[in-house]
Image (tube, protein in one colour):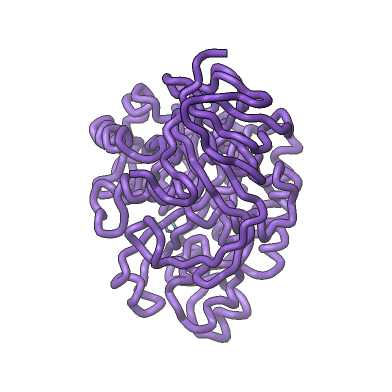
Length: 427
Ligand code: DOR
């Protein structure tokens, strides 16, 4: 065993290969140098009663930099991510300016170099995310961008999306689609259904999402290109993805914690905290999202962490921007609400998203000698109450305030550096 500078002691290691009681020793280079019984090092970090797992990977984080630093920065968002157990996040490109060319990609990578987790930018599919002409994907791919998306909007033009898929195939990258047909969704502010009728708020039909899922499955069949479906929210979308996977198509999908925990009934008080896109859906949709997560139709849980400054969220429901924060609560919502074994929860939060993001060489485990020590230590029995006031995010738009959750991140290691210790960020 190489020399250990730090040992995580007394925990149970859990990764894709299974569970075992073991200490984890970390060397000066930030790699795992030993996994086994009774390891020693200069510094000991206690993991008694805890799970030592690969760090979580978020496929869908809005860090707002450049352009909206009052809501979040790469630094503040990465601190929230580390507190949530994440060692890597994919930063969405709907910044100002959009991440749609090499120079903005470089800027985000440079900001990420000082962050508390790895920050890997997603590039826009179209210039300015305007949906009109393709962005220079090759120059962004050359800088390591693996996921491309116009998130915040879907690519409406089917011909342009087909060309993006052909381009993506030649570059070996993946397209992420925000599935929303704008002609059907236009003017809507919540899910179209019983509650939109009662509240008199114009609705966004489930079909607005499902039409684009259907179209992009068909385009993936035509081109052979991989497509990743962002934040799926309806039973119909999940059924379409289930059938596409059975057919052997290269599709993957994610769902958010808010779409497996909250329904459109939350909008009853017209509180914009519950405004999000895609909108909170029906009970039947929540049941379908959970079933999709349980049977692997949905590959990953992604936060869609979408911080918004307080004053923007204090506007009337129809004027407020959509989105909710989620990095610090995703793991605990999954362990508390899904009714799945913790191995299955980590599959959805760590190793599967690491692969989709193209980050599996560094993140998502296994916890083994020679691998970078990007790790998370979780107390699966700790119970806590969500308090937005203590969040590391610059924004407070958290719809889970006051909720009691079970399962808490205790420590997070980024390449062997303890960035979170006993629930406290270290820088
Ligand atoms: O609710 C949302 N907020 N959905 C999106 O697609 C974008 C996001 C944001 O950037 O605020």
